[in-house]
Length: 180
Image 1 (tube, rainbow, N blue to C red):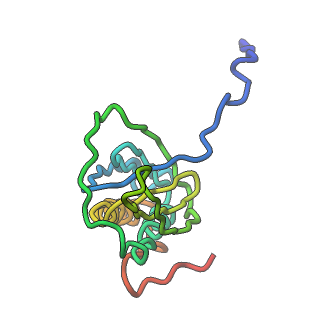
Image 2: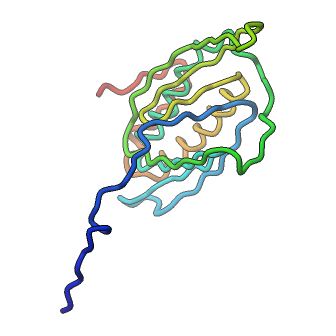
């Protein structure tokens, strides 16, 4: 048997870690869900959603992300209905990938800021969720995000082994979060 020497470059820790990033949501939202290894202990569901690739490794994780976004509903009273899509090159936006292994903690905060010319006050909602902060800029983005995340949640419930324990829909009025 031949031994392979591990070089210092191969052994060295990662040179950088992204500790936090922002995802701005505005206008209609669309996502694409893909399932790998359904009903096995390595099942995973990927959600390609704008510039974000989310991989859910459990139904608990998908339920937690949906719960965090749904919790923003009460803060959206002053957020515009639809500010329309941003006109930008699709290759001129950040793209990130996040693997959700378990339910994330979250915090919801309504935000306001005055524009640099001091003529307008802009309102939005931040949802802090682990390494991501979702900035919900309008109601259309919120409604679209809920629809995309509901699809991911329903899919993970169907294909992940813990699905039966995390079937409850966090967007329903009678939802009660699980006790940790």
